[in-house]
Image 1 (cartoon, rainbow, N blue to C red):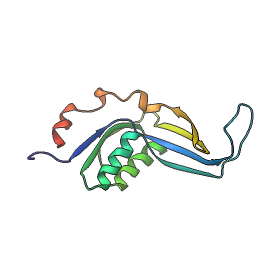
Image 2: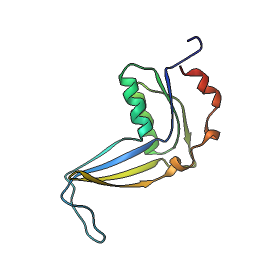
Image 3: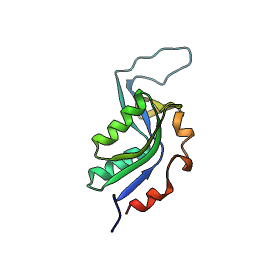
Length: 135
């Protein structure tokens, strides 16, 4: 397709996941519980879908907004490591990148999210004409 720069344009939220695993029980108010492991990972369904499409060989670009903070730079770098074009990722120095805390035990989990740029990302954050660049 002439004039198309990539196969897929992923538009959506981008955040960090902080994942605690190996909990023996659910968290309870006013009680501390131990986790076996902790990791930081690329978060958001949109990002994970885009990463999997890139892994399948499709050309993927991502359009989002993150804060000009450690987490924002981390998630954009993670997209780039997966071969995703981040040209359309807006870095907003006035905002913080969203973070989700995932507490996993047995087959259950509890999620706590600080929305950050997730709640403010809108059509105003990108040029709608970039849609013409995707197949």
